[in-house]
Image (tube, rainbow, N blue to C red):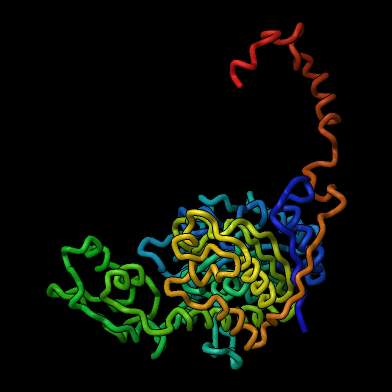
Amino acid sequence: MSSKVYFMDDRSQSIQTSLVAKMQTLFDVAGFNEMIKPGEVVAIKVHMGEYNNTAYLRPVYVRALVEKIKALGGEPMVVDTTTLPYWPYSSRTTALDYMNTVARHGFSQGTVGCPIVIADGYIGTDDVKIDLPEGFILKEQYIGTAIALADSMIALTHFKGHPMGTFGGAIKNIGVGCASKRGKLNLHLGGHPTYGLKARHWMKERCAKEECPDFEMCKQLCPAGAIHHTNGTVEFIRDNCINCLACVGVVTMCGVGFLPDDFFDASAAAMADSALAAVKAVGEGKVGYINMALDIAPWCDCANYSDRPIVPNIGLFASWDPVAIDSAGIQKVKEAAGMPDSIAMTKGAMDPGTPKFSACGSFLGVSEEIQPNVAEKIGMGTREYELIEVPEAEDATPFLCSTTPVGAKLGPVFTKKGDIYPPGGFKREEEVDMESVR
């Protein structure tokens, strides 16, 4: 059977068609209120962006969800987890770094209206182990404790490209974002004999040593001591490698350490396994998904920059099925024309019908179908979906900042102040030559 995916486009011409209002409308139409009970803790899973990324979802979307959850009697918390050191200068590898970063991005208890919780603790080892006998690759996974102990969860996802998952949607948001640092080492195949970085081919003779501009940084890359510089050579100590990915952007790019075959394909598959673990931790039927296909950058919000979107804005999706909602988003992006002068043009992916994420999100053209295919295979949902276009709300009242008209507000204070309009009016020219400035 197919799953229902509710959709509203990104056009806005009124209060009730603002993107915030559309997100709230989809929440109601999808029936997410049904899983929120008074007094229960509701996790809002959102990616709040790497330092200097600018494509992440604005805090106002989160605030609007918080208000809806509070109105239903729920106790919301905004959650994410610490990251692996994907970049040499990552900003979210500890809870302290992450909180400093999100504050810079406009996220705080004051702006979103509820606590922000880094769900896996200070360095990412506060977690719950979930058995995954049905997993495609992973047979166990580790989910951040604060997420695992929540009563329900809304996955609020920025739908865009991703360098390792090929695209980042609902599956990636909970699959990677709910995993603790220990869980990320697992899903990125740390220590895996076939697909992990431990199996990489190492060509130390290619190291330019002191002549390389990254030489000094390279000596400090690996937190586990797997990359060792000594006597003018760079050695790879395989048994020390935990697959933290701190080296990927340096030794891989310089041609010293190759990635194993199918590393990206297997990582994308493992994201789906991890997503199932997150659902099992929170509870079946206790997770709702909202995908915001806006600012569709080629790479994830975990990059420390944001490139031009690969296609124009698509719109907003909501569903109880993460496989269906991601499948609908992939199809919509595929059908769209590429954005002029974006990486879609560079990669020859401008025509409608061309897979955009495989071309623009992935390093190596990895299939954008892996995540949803694996997720369907392991029982997370179905790729068959019914796309239901939702009309705008008829009543704008729920989306107003106040139900008191501004005239009723200002009339008494204008009278009380007394001098809002100067006696005799303002000094101005009565007529000017407008034709001369047109």
